[in-house]
Length: 182
Image (cartoon, rainbow, N blue to C red; front, side, top):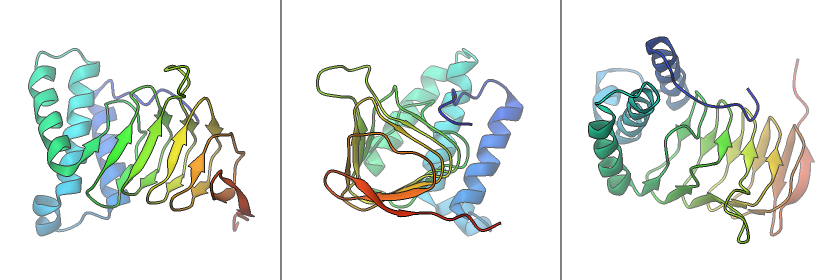
């Protein structure tokens, strides 16, 4: 799914997203399941997305819980921005614009900001599948990042990049191509 709508519209979608998120976070065992606050946040995010997209009356309650957990952990992650397989590495500041679309299997670290261009609030990044966003990365503007892109720590990404590359720097540039092993 590249730049697709990441929307949970059924119970099966909800279960699928939870399983993929759980696998990405490597949540296993009762202790990890109960006391991992990142997993707790992601379960709440997916539950809120489900109730929001199905127009359930419970969406108001789950919105409240999502906002409370967001404040506690320092996240500003709106619903329907990430595909299945989201992995948040640490608690701390993460700010995502509500119009951003990110594909499957994204690993995101602290102090990341993904937002709109200064001149147009509709110009937001679109990010493909299997991406890694390092700590402190800033992505903004009408850019597209392909599949299998890794963004280095403290990079500023303000232009588009193709698939299978590692980018870093201020402004970001390709520092290496990823050769997939088959």
